[in-house]
Image 1 (cartoon, rainbow, N blue to C red):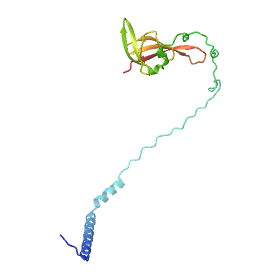
Image 2 (image 1 turned 30 degrees about the vertical axis):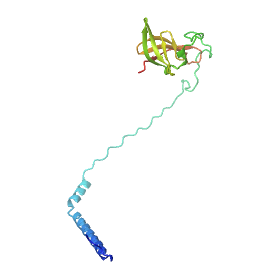
Image 3 (image 1 turned 90 degrees about the vertical axis):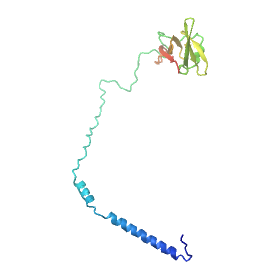
Image 4 (image 1 turned 180 degrees about the vertical axis):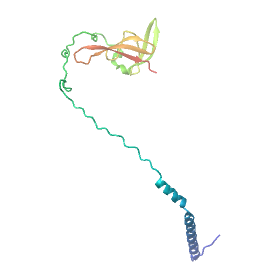
Length: 188
């Protein structure tokens, strides 16, 4: 164990020795790195004079072809097209129509996409489907019952789905309706 005196001369002497040792090790490191570097210089020269392949040429940019709309003997694309339609609410009456006097069934209060089929029952030769409404109530339906908000009448029940035919407006604003098939699949 080394004891230092209070004068500090020994500490100064050790600090000076440390600086000299550091300078000596730095001098050794520099001289070690300054050995023959001719192989590095020859590699750099070879790399400078090596055959360089040019980059591939840029792709040819074709000019944009413009389309000139010539309206000779063509209809105006922005003009309103008038079809021979009956006035709104004055449908010709042909085709399907919802039955207005029919009492509504419980499942007609729910949108069709909120109803889920959860199973089937067979009883006395009749097949019943079990339909779960969005409020959690399970209803038993058979062919001929109605469900959904578009007068959907059940036409077929299988183990995997309930098929029905809905009666919806035809979308032309003339008061006519069309039949649209729909189904509710067995949910897992």
